[in-house]
Image (cartoon, rainbow, N blue to C red):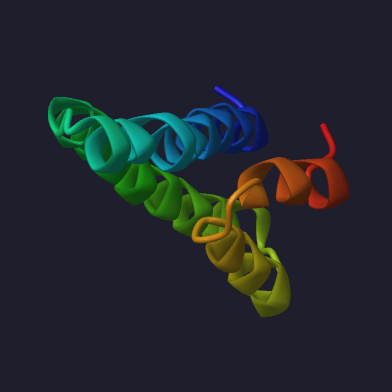
Length: 93
């Protein structure tokens, strides 16, 4: 599989899981006393986050990215909507 397509796919999933965690699961926990959503979505997001970091490092090595692009990719992983913005600005097929 194409490394860039893999990064786009994992980035989309990681970004979506982060938004679900922030805007659905956490409000359920703190406003409606339903902590189960954070347990499930949090674990899934954690797995996707680690996978996203590993794929970034893989693409960095395979595609010989400049260090700044890899840094921006890593930075995008901790910002809401970050992977979507990184994808649009830096990932071309």
